[in-house]
Image 1 (spheres, rainbow over the protein chains, first blue to last red):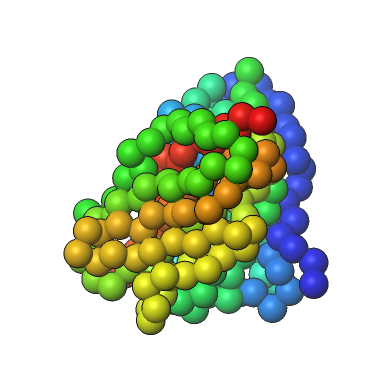
Image 2: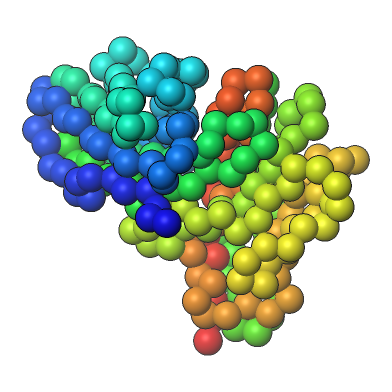
Length: 113
Length: 113
């Protein structure tokens, strides 16, 4: 079965702009989580969506938002981009049950200039 | 608060040598533990996981890890390293009450020919 697909793979944006990243989970998976990865902070949890509802949220400002559609695809939006938002954004797909593993996409590399 | 510590930021081994990557966690309940590997520019691939049962778990690519509750550790081992094992390795614990993965900062592995 197909893996987790993230689009686009690379993005360059200017400060102040907004960006939308997309994640298509593995077929049948209802949970999508988003993580930000930077060299200094490592992997940090942004939020998780399950069946179109945000089930948990990390400690990120309100500029970071997301949503999930009925087909479980998810989008993440960052508004008013800052230089510090430059990072690899990873999406993880799982069934949503507590003892199951997460499968990761290859990520979207966002560069803010 | 839940946390994961990977004490070694960078390790270099010779091809064919044995490998042990350390991971210590802090979590009040029974942990769900994971090791992931990330090659340059790629997403995260699950190497192995521990949920319950046998404390020595086998993973892909010849890796194994041992869960030691008394030491709050989940160290990753491989008896003979291959050049293709050079990558970044991440230990993570699933914080069930918050439904998110808590990550260590990673250990970068270099393999000398």
